[in-house]
Length: 287
Ligand SMILES: C[S@@+](CC[C@H](N)C(=O)[O-])C[C@H]1O[C@@H](n2cnc3c(N)ncnc32)[C@H](O)[C@@H]1O
Image (tube, rainbow, N blue to C red; front, side, top):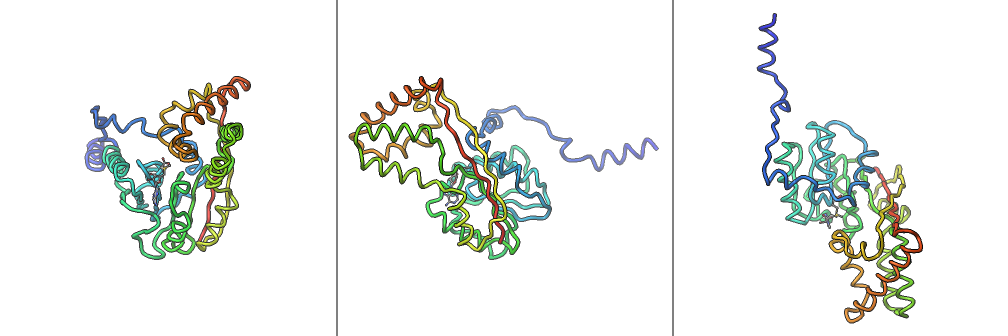
């Protein structure tokens, strides 16, 4: 009897038991990749998105592979997942992760979600974590989602909405008012309004032929010691500063951003720290 068990063990040993961690610079380069910014939104998506077998899944704006690769692993190999993003270097990074993590049910597609290379009515689930604020033409992306989703298929997305970092933008506005920069104030208003709300995003679903079935709101805080810490943070410089600089004429940059830093520091001193609120939305619609 013992030898029979031995035989079974040799021939059907699950693949995962063979896994061995290879400590190499290439492997370790893919650790710690998940930005703190993306994580709360991705966790919200993973909390609410429906998990079902045998789905064709698409993550639009998949970047370096989050939450695409996590979702694909949680779904398992009966589901085929695709990530689409026009950012080639991020796609290469995602592909390297797929190789290192031995994930076989994901394909990365270089391209824009405004022009999907999928047949009509061919996808069960589309997800997007922090995609919508980055799409040049969100309405075109929604239209494509409406086209490729199967009847009954779902679009689930997470995003930061209206009211994002209200404390920071309040101080920015006050700074521009002090400097009497009315044109910049108008641009700041437009900049803030590009982020949607539950209502405006529901409108995009509707126009694309999708019925919003549920949504959840939440928020988290990002805390900084003061304005100097915020404005010098690598993530702020990478993801936000260029947008803020566009609000002000180049020749006014030094004046405005020094005044902004000073005002943020005063705000932080008065409040004990600079605490910025991030309102989050998970919204889901069905075709
Ligand atoms: C804020 S990042 C989010 C990346 C990732 N989903 C995450 O949660 O970390 C937004 C992503 O949208 C991508 N993007 C911008 N325009 C796009 C488009 N038209 N179609 C698909 N992805 C797009 C960007 O290249 C970027 O990777």
